[in-house]
Length: 106
Image 1: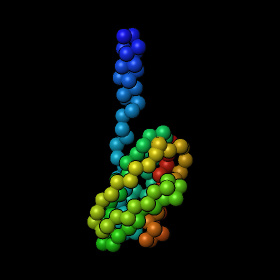
Image 2 (image 1 turned 90 degrees about the vertical axis):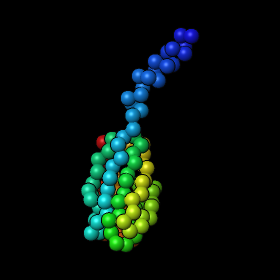
Image 3 (image 1 turned 45 degrees about the vertical axis):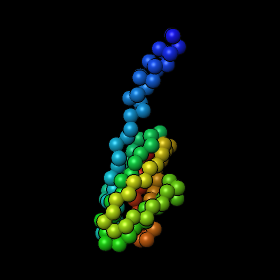
């Protein structure tokens, strides 16, 4: 009985640490990411909500994050990343490679 109680207590006390990180929204407009740099905590899975505000398709891509997602004009897509180690991770629009941004993990 004590083991069950101890396990339940451990689970309840760990709940705040398991709380989900709120989504991070990034827009693609005028051939740039807005914001061009976002900061997220290390060691946490994060949802990036990418809104393509352009009249043409965009492709969110990141070799360092190992993610790519085509987003139709006017559409929104979610991309999950992490948990990540501290560092700086670049992403870009593969259809317009001058459009670049960064995720900074602290």
